[in-house]
Amino acid sequence: MSIQVLSDQLASQIAAGEVVERPSSVVKELVENAIDARAATINIDVREGGRKLVQVADDGEGIRAVDLELAFLRHATSKLQTAAELTAIRTLGFRGEALAAIAAVSQVTVVSRAAGETAGTRLVLDGGVKSSRDTVGAPQGTVIAVENLFFNTPARLKFLKSITTEKRLIDEFVTRYALAYPAIRFRLVHDNRITFQSSGNGSLRDVLVAVYGPETARQLLPINDRVTGRQGDTVIGAEDENPVTPSPAHPVTVSGFVGPPSLHWSNRSHITLFVNGRWIKDNSLTYAVIQAYHTLLPTGRYPLGILFITLPPLEVDVNVHPAKTEVRFRPRNAVFGAVQRAVRHTLVADAPVRSMGAWAAGGDQTSPGWTGQLNHSAFARRGESSQDQLELHWPAPAAETNIAGPETAVLPTTNLGGDKLPIMRIVGQVGASYIITEGPDGLFLIDQHAAHERILYEQFMAARERDTIVSQRLVAGTAVHLPPPQAALLEGNLERLAAIGFQIEPFGPNAFMVRAVPAILAQLDPARAVRAVVEDLEQGDIPLQEEIEAKIILRVCKSAAVKAGQTLSLPEMEAMVRQLESCQSPHTCPHGRPTLIHLSAAQLAREFGRM
Ligand code: ADP
Ligand code: MG
Image 1 (cartoon, rainbow, N blue to C red):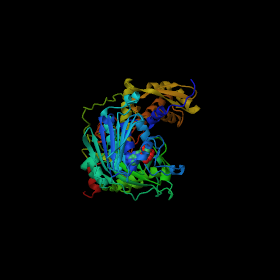
Image 2: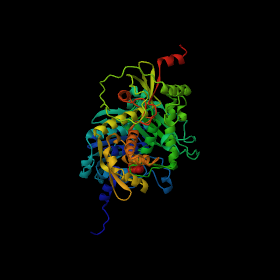
Image 3: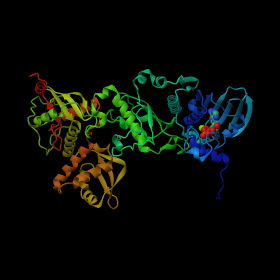
Image 4: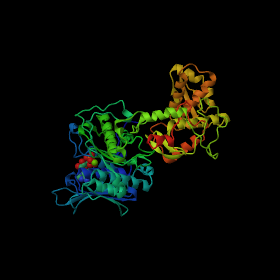
């Protein structure tokens, strides 16, 4: 076939695909145009989730009659003239693509009257081709009606989600922009029913109430916008080793609202980011917000945040993709750090959190939320003495535990007395690391990681004894590459690993394919789990053959156990303590560290001078 230049219409349809993915993209582009035109009121009318109609009416500057056809040409824009301007975009639009793209895949009617003109002009286009133009009476501003989206691209039409999904995406989008522009009055109508409106009085609080309802809106915490990227402290968490370079050249400010830790959702969609007034999607900044809640939220739950990030337009590149929802930052780390700090500071300043003391300064690694005002030395003393004289003379727990009893488990660790634990009541969790419980005589502090290791170890050993270790097949298999000495070590132990649930096959020189892992590791990265096992085997003297398996099992349990720093829900703590109660050797982890510290009623009384 000879090479040919695509027809204009075909080229437009292809290009349209990147800008107009679905009805909500039409809403986005039209609303952004209205905002760029300095509208005070934007009315959005939608029928059938936008498949039938998306109409956006604004009272902005309008499009001059002489420009109306031009506006629908590709790469035609009033917002950009020189290449230099491209490096410092201040408007939401600049590529001059949206109207052309939308028109190429729908039937468009536009009525616009620019300031200073006496009448409006109406233009009708069908698949991007002009079908009529006339003069009509109209108020200043622009109304664009987009009908029958994708009528001429049936393949795209097929990919649209249900009407409910499209409606939801449009709702999300319009409410986001209403939050970012509280001075603009928005009204959204689905199938003749008003589903959202904002007053346009300039108060973000009022829009928050309109979006989230008064109950939630009342709880949101305003971000303290004194916090800027100019401060030079370190970023918490992910980029610990990466101090934010303090630089007056990169002023980043963050404002908006975040939810208190008590408000959380099952996904990230409630984290909304704006950069210089533009809604963006950015996984790394979303993560910065989540990271700021580290240890404050239950696992698998996500916070609410509406963040407005401002920085000089020169520092942001919005010309990454036609949809303009991705941006690149020049001071990447500074932005990440500013977001995380702003959120963290806001949370710390919130009253109930402040009582945690020097928390924001960052405690030790194992218990990030906990530096505590309790007397550590007193605890240490208790800890030591209680190890020697744990006097646990309460009745053994009821026999109705549902954990498969590790009747035959061989436990190589020293068993401190072998006493079972009493039935305990959960009081709570401190520092996302320790569970506090109350027993018949005083209180217990349980190290959640050590305790869980113990539980998993005994369950695992019991299963091993009965030959019922459950293995989890990986859907795709994971390749692991190891340095030659480690590869040899792993190769020599494949059978042993198979006995406890790892199915690993050699896969080329120094490479292995992990096909299955013990079920308790199902949630973890299989490659990392295998590496950790090999590293353990490498350490110390060559272990005796019989010891190798024990060593691997220890590592498996350690990897699978909850870590310090993980917030546990009450049912999770309940389950853990019940299982610990039913362990044969509940007092130590399989490495011999204590799992719990007991403070007897007598000790407490003594400590408080009651005796
Ligand atoms: P861009 O927004 O990138 O410039 P568009 O294709 O979205 O490209 O719009 C093309 C041009 O049409 C804009 O530059 C602007 O001059 C004009 N325009 C579009 N929508 C409106 C509107 N609602 N009010 C005033 N002018 C508009
Ligand atoms: Mg535009």
